[in-house]
Structures are given as structure tokens and as C-alpha cells.
Amino acid sequence: MKNIILIICIGLIVSSCISIDSRSNDLSKNQQRFTEGKSYIFSITPSYNSEKDRSPIEDLGRYFYLYKKGGKYVRITPKFSSQELIAEILNENKKVIDERNLKLLSYLKENLDKSRESKTLYFNDKYEILKKSNYSVADLGQSWGYYTALTFLDQNGNLVITEKTTDLSLIFLIPVGGKTVSSNIFNKVE
Image 1 (tube, rainbow, N blue to C red):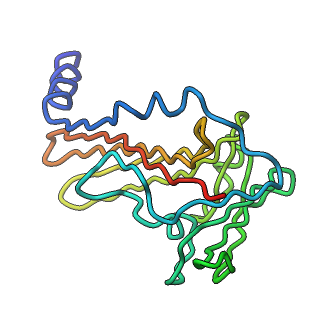
Image 2: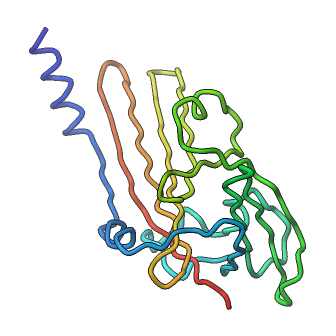
């Protein structure tokens, strides 16, 4: 039995792909806290993304489930006490063209277990905003995926989203895995 577990572990290590943005840890060291009820405005497109060929988040509006075209900025207003986050797309004149109120629950096990809605966000004790999801697919093998996005303000007040994705598969009893950590920075707008 020990040999089988060892073979699976070695197979997983050998067949894994790992891509980690080294800047992700540096960005989170000097972060600021979101303030209750304060509105923050950011550019809708990232000024930095760790995957130069393609950004995981090319549109901040879509990240907050806003799909109107013609947006230039995104304004978010976290209301931790009333458990909501107001997200708005603004045009070049900073007029609202789309708005959505999202659930913003405390990051506790009971909230994670109860809430199965995809448009639910969470906040932790540092007032970082988190988005989580996972999936499981059975096809030619079994696949599992886990996604976590951590949203916070850097030392300059820019919005940083660090995404962590882990994929595990068992295809014909061969373990395959991958892990990606990427970051996006959206500049604050005065």
C-alpha cells in the first residue's frame, strides 16, 4: 500500500505544471485595508498582469459580474456590516452605466458551506475580498479544480487581484496536476 501511495505522489510531482508569479507575495506585504462604505474607482483594464500573453482578468467589470459595454472605470463600495458590495461600471465621464449589488459574507466555514451562489464574495479579518469556486468532472477520468481570487489594495491604493488555481486529474490512473498563481493590478482613479 505504501508503494502505491509513493508511486501516485511521484507521478503527481512529475506530471505537474506550476506557474507562480513571484511578485504576488511582494504585493500583499504592504497592503491597505478597505474602509467600510468608502467608494474606490479603478481603471477597467489592468496596468499589470503576470501572464503577458493573456490576462486572466482583462475586464474588471466582468470580474464583478457587470457586462455593459462602454465602461472605462469600475467603482466598488464594500459594506461589510450589511454584507454587500456595490459594483458599478462608469463611462469616461464617471457616470454609472451598470450596477450590481453582490453578497459579501464573512469568510467562515458555515458561510462557505451554505452559500452555493457563484456571485457571492467573502471577506476575511484583514478585509480582503475573496472569490472562491470549485468543480468536479467525471469523463475519461476524474478532474477537480479549485479557484481562489484574493482582492486587496496595494500600498499605493491600486486594486490587486491575485488568482490561485489548482487543477488535479486522474486519467487512466495517471495523476496529473497544475497550479497557477497570477496577479493583476488595476490603477486607482482620483
